[in-house]
Amino acid sequence: MFYNASYLYYLELALQAYCAWHCISRGTQNKWIWLIIFVPVVGSVVYLYSEVFSNRRINTPKINIGAVINPGGKLKKLEDELRFTDTFANRIKLADAYLAAGYTDNAIELYTTSLTGAFAENEHVMAQLMVAYYEQERYDEVIELAKKLYKLPQFIRSKSHILYALALENSGQVDLAEAEFKLMKGRYSYFEARYQYGLFLTRNGREQDASTIFTDMLDEQPHLSPVEKRSNRVWFAKAKEELKKIPVV
Image (cartoon, rainbow, N blue to C red; front, top):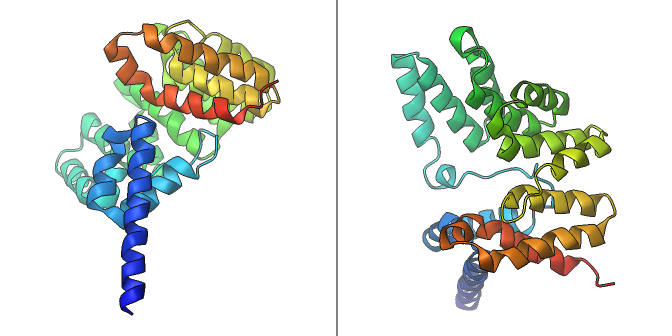
């Protein structure tokens, strides 16, 4: 019995150490390290599922760290606020929290019922609805919302634009998807979009083109400001990982 307990203890330490090393090496320690340290077994399992064993697709199920540590606390507070004062702002705060916690159906209901009157074309709500619909693989609805946002100047650099391109791909419109990705290829910028473009190329059997995308990203990294490096380090880490998987020709 003593041997088994000791074995499990050292196994837990090894798992925790690996997860801590992995998240630091990928530049995601701000998001994960406290969960791994203070909730060692659960935190490590959540980290492995979300960051190590997840596939390359953007629609990997998302796990909310705050919900693991304090499940339901924030949601209950926001639900109480909405019951007390039913305003557009309170509805959207709760919808955003539902979406982050994985309650996508609840989020969609609040978002859609809030798109009325003066808020019928609210940019934030439509962008969040795109995220929710994408998670449910409702690609046609993602595309329809994207068309409403497309002419806004900020759309070109947004997460919504990436989701639009991915929805086009998933609905079989591969050429149109690539055209959208190409619009997000500026040098020294668009790092998330370029990373997703690289994955798109890999999924479509164009690994050497993907290698060029990832290599260019990493070549640009040393020339960025410290702030730009910090804000994009996760994409550099992911690009480096993907580059290792591509065979050298």
